[in-house]
Amino acid sequence: MIDKTCSATEAVKFLNHDQVIMVGGFGVPGTPFLLIEEIIKKDCKALTLIKNEANEAGLGVSRLIENGQVKRLITSHLGLNSTVIALMNEGALEVQFFPQGILAEKIRAGGAGLLAIVTDIGIDTILRDNKQVVRCNGKEGLLESALRADFALIHAAMADRAGNLVYAKTARNFNPLMATAANCVIAEAEIIVETGQIPADQIHTPGAFVDHVVEIGDLPPEYGVLEHHVH
Amino acid sequence: MSLRSEIYHQNMGYLSIMSIDPKIKISKRAAQEIAPGQIINLGIGIPTLIPSHLPPNMPLSIHSENGVIGVGGSVDRQHADRNLIDAGGTYIDTIPGASYCDSALSFALVRGGRLDITFLGTLEVSEKGDLANWIIPGKFAPGIGGAMELAQKARRLIITTTHTTKQGKAKILKECRLPLTASKCVDLIITELSVFRITPKEMILEEIAEESDLETVARHTEGSFRVSENLTTF
Image 1 (cartoon, rainbow over the protein chains, first blue to last red):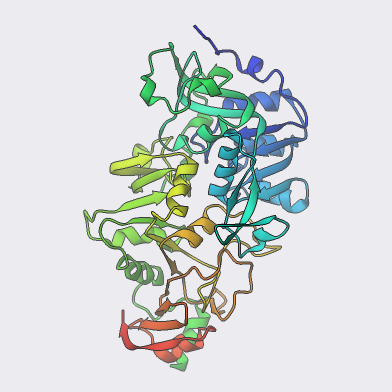
Image 2: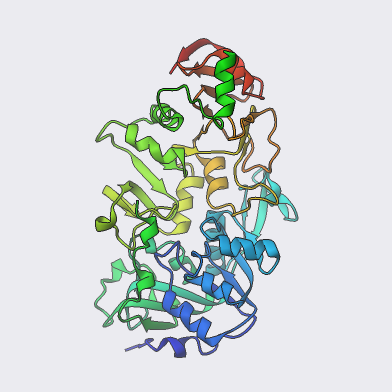
C-alpha cells in the first residue's frame, strides 16, 4: 500500500529560498496554518507566494510576509489585511493582482499542463496594459499565462494514506486547483484514514496529485472561528 | 428645495430629512428586482441588506464567490462553523439544496452566464454604464477580487449606492475618472434619490424617491439623462 504520510518538517525538507509556493485557503477556511508555520520555522527567504488573499494581519501567510520571507505576492484581494497593503505601498513587497476567477483559471491551466488561457475579463481596463492581446472567435482577449509552483500547500478535512483528499464546505476554494499545479504537493489533513475508507466517488482530489500527507493532530486555535467576523 | 439640498450636503451625502435610513430605502427598492428562482450575488455594503426585504420562502440562490451556491444568512457565534463563510468573511449558513464548489467552478458560474443579477456598490458610475469601484490610485488599492468578473459577466448588473459621496460629490458621472472595473456593464442604478436605467443609447430616469424631486436628482447627478415618460415614485 502506498503511504504518503510524513511529518511537516520532512514534507518541506526540499523547500528553499527563491522558490514559488502556492497556498490554499480563502480566509481561514482551507488555509494550511500548520504547513505555513513550518516554512516560518525554516526561514526560507525571497519566496514568491501565490494565494487568493493574504489572510489577516498576524495570521497564516500574513505572518510569512510580515517575517520578510516573501518578495513577491500573486493574489486577488488584500482588503482584510492593511498590514500587507502597507508593505506593498512601502515597496517592501511586490504584489501582482488578478481577478479572482482568472487567478483560479491560471492555476488550473498550470495544473492541466496548459501554457495559458485567453479571457476578455478586464479587456477595457488597466489590466490590459502590458498584456498580449489575441483575437479569438472575432473577439479580443488577454493572454494570461498559466501558473505553476515548486510547492503547493493544501489543507484538507480528510485524507487517506495514499493522498486522496476531501475538503470541507468553503475550505475547498483554491485547494483542489493548487493541488494539481505544483512540482511537490503537500496536504495537511485534520483526519487521516486508511486507504480505501473514503468512497472513491467522494474524493475531491485524487491522491495521484499529492506527494505528502501531514496529519495536523489537535487543531491549533488559528483554525477556529474568528470572533471579529461573527455578527 | 434649497433647504432640502443644504441639509443634503451637510449630512454627508445622505438625505437626513428622510424618515428612513437611505441604505434601507435603496436595498428595499433593489429587492424588487429579484424574480423567484434566480441566482444572485451580493457585494459588500448595501447589497447585503437586500435579502431582508424579500418575501419569506422566496426560492432564490445566493452565490458567494468563495464557493457557495445557496447562502442562507449570517449566523451568531453559537452557529458559526469554522469552515463556512461568505466571500466577505462573515459566518453563514446555507439553504436546503445548497452546494459548495472550488474557486474555478464558482467563477465559471459567473463568467459562463448563469448568474442572473449582481448587486454592487460603487465609487463612480457613468451615464454609459461604465463602472469604477476597485481602485483609487495612490489611495485605495486592495485588489480586484471578484469585482471585474461579476460586473462584466452577470446577466444584469444593478448598482446600489448613495447618490453622492460623503462629501456630497456626484457619483453618477458623464465619464468615470477612476480606472474602470468594466465598461458598459451597468443595467440599473438605485440610489436613495432615484432609479436610473441604462440602455446602449442613453441613461433614463425611471423613478424618483417620494422624499425627493427632479431638481434635487438633477443637481446631484453629473451624467446626462432623459426623464422617462412613465416616471414613477418609490
